[in-house]
Amino acid sequence: LQSLTSLSSELETHTQRFESNEGKFEQEHQSVSKTFKETDVRIRNLADALGKQEEAEDLRLKKEQEALAEKRAMEQRIKAISDGLANTNETLGTQLPRLNIKVDETTSRFSKMENELQDQQNKMLQLSGSIDLTKEYWRGLEKGFRETHRSVALSEELLPAPPSRPVSNSGR
Image (cartoon, rainbow, N blue to C red; front, side, top):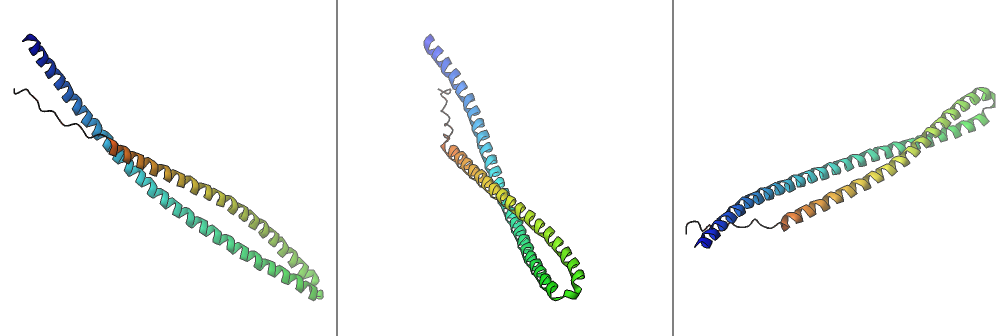
């Protein structure tokens, strides 16, 4: 009889411990679920921000390419003007000193513009490489976020369901 009482007491103690641990497990499960949901929202926000930044980068690159095309067209126009001045110089021998001064000025400006154009072309090449590297970085980051999201979602699905509460025998 005494061992039965002892066993009953031990059973009650273990039942209480189990119930208190079950509550802790449920709280921990809710906390982990909340963290997963918050992480999912953050990942989606980051993916949206990444898409917007890529669009802005594409627009900026397009504008810079248009500016470079305009500069190239201007270079061609300047070259045509310079060529025309050289032809005029040959035909206008009486105005040669005055025309030589204008040609020298134009050539100087043309050289400056060629140098500026070359600088712009170099900058565009550097920028293009930087943009490609940035796009590759963001794509990798986006892929990492997606994989993390998938693994988090998969982990959440693999968590065991909370155990059901056992029926207490205290009434018997």
